[in-house]
Image (cartoon, rainbow, N blue to C red; front, side):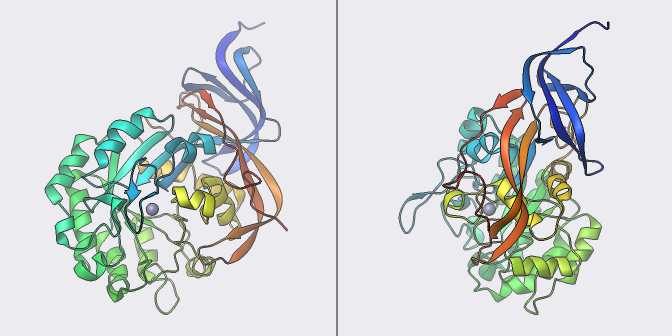
Length: 409
Ligand SMILES: [Zn+2]
């Protein structure tokens, strides 16, 4: 008999997602402290303090949501004061998501509250992108003129906490994009370059007013973005997105992806259209990552209810379950970098014990886009458990009256 090996947690009987091969096959995971110590055929001499029976469940590396709004306390002052931030752990571990990126809720005027108060008190790993507009989304629109962008202060803010502020976010919306044109994304890129971080650009003028947004979209893709910069809202139907006024995919988008620019879906309330998605996919561009763009409003009123709902929505467009899960684990992890303290998006002995346990339901589920169109998909995902740094996290009831699952036929 081999000597017994003590571990803290054994998850057995489940199906593992291999994010390198995009395959799912039976296997177990043993965890000690915050680290995976054995995986797949865990030897029978591993003796756990706690055991989870994962029969019928898929075990994935901790799900990553690359675009959320979790900077608690940011409110929209007009037309009436309204909270707009999702609770970080509700977007995160209580929804089966171990890492979230707050995508530009805060600018230099208010990022301190995210960094000093929200991040340290959350169980979820939170990273942040600094909004190019000094006020962040506390005032929408956050950029109305060049006075709303303070280059030196933004660079200093990022450099003060580069461990958590990992990029810059700029939204190509009116009136900022009308007033500044290409100077708006160029100013954001200049901050990101000087601070040594990536840029995420929200493409698509949700107000629909700006011809400049149309004019600068190809230039952003061709002239501005570098490898590992990110376009979010890849499936928006708004003007200035990846679909031009001729309703075809901008050819510059394919060239940009070939150069290493990353394309994120960023579902959001109004930034996802099934029609635009089909045009982008027909044009030959497959986005790299799935994210929710969840806010307090979108969680309950739609149309971005949760990251797992967004994964089901993307599968409804023809993606396989396996590739959609890789787009929510290894691919966003690769964008965030390979620093050893992160080591996200994969499961192997020695890697950080962030895991998500999912139950996949089969049926004909109704997914909804920002224009209230419905697409039926074959799978809906339900988070059952979530392990963050070796600790088992409770899962919330879910955003809908019936819990996690969308309506079905
Ligand atoms: Zn957003």
